[in-house]
Amino acid sequence: MANGWDESAEAWIASIGEEGDFSRACVLDRPMLARVRAGNFNYALDAGCGEGRFSRLLQGIGVRTVGIDPTARLIQEARRRDPGGDYRVGYAENLQFPNETFDLVVSYLTLIDIPDVATAIAEMTRVLKPGGRLLIANLTSFSTAGEGWSSEAERRFCIDHYLDTRALLSEWDGIRITNWHRPLSYYMTLLLGEGLILRHFDEPRPHGGKPAVAEKYQRVPWLMMMEWEKP
Ligand SMILES: C[S@@+](CC[C@H](N)C(=O)[O-])C[C@H]1O[C@@H](n2cnc3c(N)ncnc32)[C@H](O)[C@@H]1O
Image (tube, rainbow, N blue to C red; front, side, top):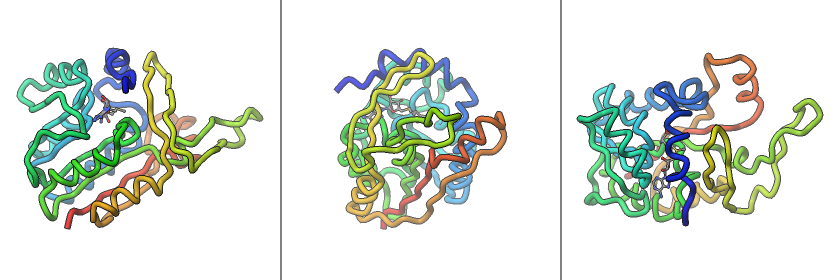
């Protein structure tokens, strides 16, 4: 199913920049990198690497990284920005790596984008070595079930049809993509079904950035992190 990423690649590159958007620069990068540092990893897969920003951060702290993404324009940009890096066109549902290749697999805001997330989670688990970690940052299912702020001066954030899995059209900054809403139990059931063990969970607080934006990030459960170990 076309998800809009090919058509949105140019706008995505312009919007994400080198620092990343608020969710990345002011919420997720810091705790995600802290988990990576704590794990002492050698070889990582960044599944759905986009234009490679987080892959470059991983390499910057000494973790050899392969980035894969199905959007050819984003992989082209990742290679342009990091000519020595390893970036490949590919789908998380069909990883072209042998079993037990990596000690870290990162899914940084990609589970919401992946149509067949059950196969993708099985694949990410397959390519992990025993003892390896699957480090996930995702939009919370509360936010993907969100229908926006109520009109009375944004006093409430509205959530509806929480248990119904569905595709969502998201549009901002010239980007027009399909994301998926799935209840949290959907993801947890898949991850537990792979035999993975939850080692870390967080809903990181924002730091820095515009106070008005940070305030909104504190009011609604937007983002979460999970780290799972393959036994
Ligand atoms: C929100 S972007 C995140 C990119 C990058 N991880 C980051 O945080 O900047 C989602 C990415 O998922 C990719 N994607 C879409 N379908 C995918 C699939 N089936 N397997 C792997 N990645 C996919 C898109 O091409 C896009 O680059």
